[in-house]
Image (cartoon, rainbow, N blue to C red; front, side, top):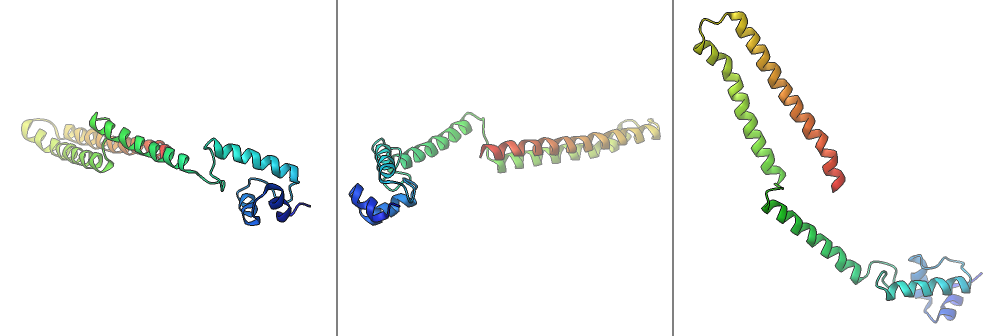
Length: 159
């Protein structure tokens, strides 16, 4: 069995660095000298290509790429806002709430206004009108809630 000391001598590394490479998964504990050497050479190629850091974690190139990606996403959101394709949830909630309150208020006023405007309309007709208004309002609320809930999983999946 190959020890850390054997690997360190064979690869001209410190035992501490061998342990770090093993912890990073560059080569397995107990690997033969040949297996460890090949794995180490492959690791060095990845480091040289900028795909890995020396200790196996993210390197500066990857960190910069991640930062650039985040910055691009931020710019994309700002552009979408400027084009009118995106608005903050708080604003949309406030607008929809105000619009809903206005519609509900007018729906609630409709039977009284009809009694005033059409005094000769039979009482049964007002009962039917009230039932239709209540049904329409309930369906509107149900459809709005269903639509909002159906969009939530898509929003969460995108995040």
